[in-house]
Image (cartoon, rainbow, N blue to C red; front, side, top):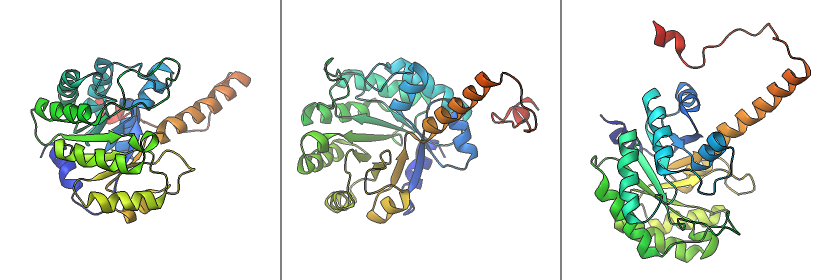
Amino acid sequence: MTLAKKLRTRLQQREILVAPGVYDAFSAYRAEVAGFEAIFVSGSALAAAHLARPDIGLLSASETADIAARIADRIGIPMLVDADQGFGNAFAVGRTVRMLERAGASAIQIEDQQEIKPADSPLSRPLILQDAMVDKIKAARDALTDADVMISARSDAMATEGFERALERAHAYVEAGADMIFAESLTTRAQMAEFVRQMDGKAPLLHNLLRDTDEVTDAHMAQQIGYSVALFPGTALGAVGAALDRAFADLKSAPELLGGEPKIDRIGADAYLK
């Protein structure tokens, strides 16, 4: 069974799939060792880890595919890859999907934001037209060679157009061929529950657990509402950043090796070198 097929099969279960955000082969491998069934290659985590920059569209499709390929070479669990807006129009989306499928993605996420953000407001979320996103989803599906690879459609319409338009876009994206739907900025339990009700099981729904100010802050609650996938895009990067701050502060104040802690093989070198 391919990893893409394994992901599709897993999403038929009622239990929610928890996918931590990763940013390189090391973080992906540690997630697999921890027992996670799938990972999310987060665009914001890639920008932070590889560029030390905010997620404002600085990474290219080829850079993303290269990182995804390195991750896929090390792990044996499905990988959902954040492809931003597909890195261009519908033609570019087709090329991006082919690259990411070859890199080992089991699912590819495309959002309905504009390809290029205004220079004076790089963190804004201006949307493309619904029909343009529909064309991107169709192009993504046509580009796949493995029909089991899933296309996840993210909509940011809630933040700019409101709930009803977010729902309308979600239905249109499913009709266009999206296998999963991710409606960003649903911040209350009531909004999420109504979205689940209105989608009526047409596709698995993803929820982003990123802000502790939202009402739903744990995967079990999202499962009770009816969601299938819980993404935690910032957990790994936040933990590593905090650990580096502590380690480098200690080293700066006392530049010496501190004994007493056993060496831990965190990359599986012992097994690899046998």
